[in-house]
Structure formats: C-alpha cells, structure tokens
Image (tube, rainbow, N blue to C red):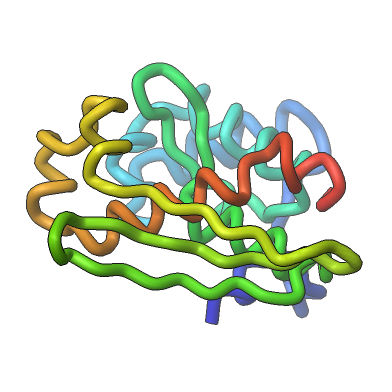
Length: 165
C-alpha cells in the first residue's frame, strides 16, 4: 500500500542528531546495497537527500529510496509524493487509469478534502512535447511512466506539498 511511506511512528529508527553523526552515517551506508545506484558512494548527496526528506517528514532510508536527481533537479518519485499526500489526510480520492489506445494516456482523478474533484491527464502528445516519449523507460514501461508522470503533475508540490508537512 502506498501509505506505507507516509509518516508513521516507528518502533526504532536511527536518525542522526547532528552534522557529524549525519556525515558518519552517510559514509557508512554509501557503499551498501540499501543505497540506490544514483547515490552509491556519494555521501554528500546522500546527506542532501536525507535532509530534504527530513524536511518532508521522511526517515533517512525512505528519503534515499523516494527521491532522485533527474537532469540536475531533485524530485520525489510519484509513489513517495502520493504517500505523503495520502498520509496527510488531505486527499479523499485518487483514481488512476491508463489506456494505450489509440495512444498512451494516463488520467488521475483526485479530490482534496472540502474541494471539487479534479482530473489530470498525461498522454502521448504531452510526453512528446516534453521530449520524454523517446526515452528508454517510456519505451520499456509505458504504463508505469505515463501514470507516474500524471501523478507527479496532479500532486505537484505547489498544489499539495506546502500543506502536507
């Protein structure tokens, strides 16, 4: 379930309490298999990701596994963003659909507490305009990429995340 990433009380969690502990922690985990490839052996980037995630209420490892740097910009994976929004209690509904006929298109229908339903779509032409449709991941996993991109569009930080923290 997506909500598993959202803020929860943990029975035990090691979280550094100062800069020295954080740097040491990042150095120790940077070479482990728990660290995603794009953070492997990069303790400074691990520290930045952990700090960014901490500001959103994520623990250290959830931060590393829920964020990436794409073309020089830090972003959350759609599943992480959705989990934070769902965990905040601000979202009453989130329905995702996908079709590949006649061209790939994902639609997300969301409803925030106290607001009207809103529908967002992300299709082939959107991907083409953003120069995404030719990328390897869009070719190999079109359903996943179109639905995740659509979720990112409808759950953009400027629309939700300022109220989630």
